Length: 161
Image (tube, rainbow, N blue to C red):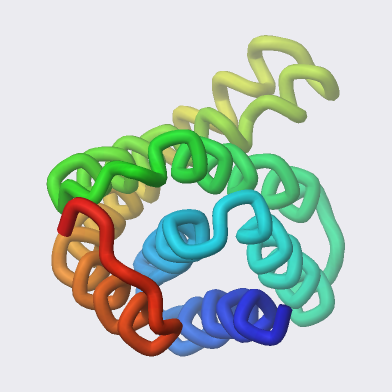
């Protein structure tokens, strides 16, 4: 449980540390890493991260988005957790970054209809493009070395490495 809490705190700490850079952070890398290492238990890390975000930045519409958007990535990673391909996870995290704004637009559909959801999504496309590229690059560079390090520290055998 401590490791899951630490992963959630690391998600928060790295996002705060990189806050000056728009949509460039390590959260997707850590969500995927947690899912690869801990399966369904990784959702604890995700919700610790989201709760810490709310406590630091306040609770607003984005908080509702974070409750399900990061869960989508975690569940996707859990479903494919046997895959150890750097390129697969690079593609997943890049596509997730690209779709982040569209996923966040869902509540706006229920609040203001198609026009509100569409305008919210379109306004954020430049940030989604940055999110896509940064997620892909960071995942490509960091995910597998972090996975190898964590499995070694946890004393687990590496699968399909």
